[in-house]
Length: 489
Image (cartoon, rainbow, N blue to C red; front, side, top):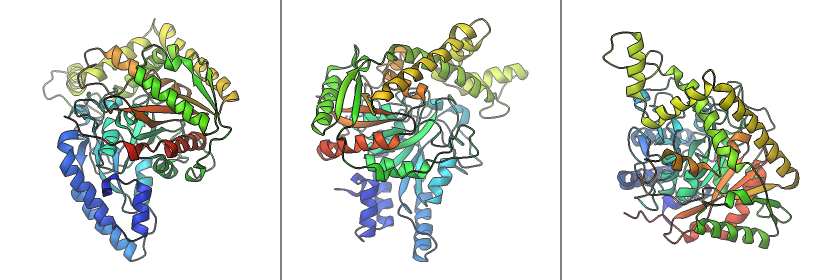
C-alpha cells in the first residue's frame, strides 16, 4: 500500500514504529499532488514549498523536545472559505480572488496548535453555493473515480483531494449537505457535526444558521480524531455551544447490538436510483446481522425540507453577501461614474451566476409583501422539521438514509437546470435545518464502480452514536480494501 493510501491513524503508527518519517510522508503527498492535480483540479492554492519549510521547523522542534503530539507534521487540506492568516481565502470567487486573510479561523488555530502542515486551499462552489463544484470561478474539480463526473459540492475540492490521495484528510463546510454529498460521490467519509459544536469563527458565511465546519477523511476513525481537534466552545462565535469536551475516538466500540435504527421511507422514495436503493437495503441487512434493531418509519419532512432550506439559505446569503459592495470587501469595478454604478458593476462582475441567482431569490423572499408568505412561513416549517426529528429520536438512536438519491453525475449534466441540481440535496438539507449531526460513509459501488453513500443521522450532540454506528459498519464492509478510485477518462 502506498503512503498516500494510508489513513492518518495508520501514518501515526508508522511514525511511532520508525517505518516512516514525517518528511517521507509529506514528500509522498507533494509527489501525489504533482502527479494528479492536473487531472483532478482540487486545489485553488497549493502550498507545497511552504509545507516543506514547515516540516523542517516541526522536525527541529520535535528533535529539541519543544513540541510533542501525534499529529505534528501530518499534512491537511482546507476548504477555501475557511480563513488562513497570510494565505489567500478566495471562496472560489472573483469577488475574493486576491483576498489574503489577516487572521486564522478558530479551526485553523486548532490545526496549527497541533503543528499540522497545510498543503493548500481546496476548490469549492463559489461562496459554497452549489452541489457539484462546477460553480467555481477558477476551475471545475473532477471526481477521481471518473474524471468525467463531478465530485459533488460545495466541498468537492476537499472530497476529491482526499479520495485522490493528495491530502490524508481535509476540512469542509456543510450548509445543506456540502460535506456529506461530496463524500458520498467520492467514496470517503464526511461528517457534519451538530450546529454549534465546531466554531464558525473565520468561516466565510453563506447561511449563518445552517453552516457548519466538519472533517472529510478516508475512514471513520480519522473523522473522530479530527473532530476531537476542532470541536469545542469558542467565545468568538456566539452560536458556539459550551458542552463538556468528549473523546470521540473512545466512542468507536465496533458494536451495535441493540442499537435502534429508523429508516424513513420518504428518503427512499421516487427519484432514488435503483442501485442506490439496493445498496441501502444491503446495508440495513448488515446492521440486522450485527445485532441492531432496524425499522421502517415515516418522517414526513423530506417534501417540505428542500423548499424550506432554499428559502432560509438564500435569504441569509442575500444578507451575508451584502458586504461585498466594491468598497468594504472584495473586487472593485475599474470603471464607474458614481457610487451606485460602483455597487452594481462590482457585484455584477465579481459574482458568478449561481451566487447571483441565490441573492436574487433571497432578496425576493425578504422583501416587503413576500416576507410573511415565504421567509416567515419557512421558519415555521423549520420548527415542524425539528419537532419531527425530536419525535423520531424518542424511539430511535440513529436514522439511516441514502446520502444522495444518485451517484455522481456527469460534468455539465445539471448546470442548465438548477432545480434538478437542488434536488440532489433532498436527503441532506433537513439535517442542517434541524441542526443535527450527520455522517456519510461509503456502502458500496454501482455497476459503473461509482461510490454510493449512506447517511446516518443522530440526535443533537450525539456524534459518538453515529460515529460508532458508522465505524461498526465500516469494519464489516471493508470498503477501502475492496474499492479504489480508477481516474477513468
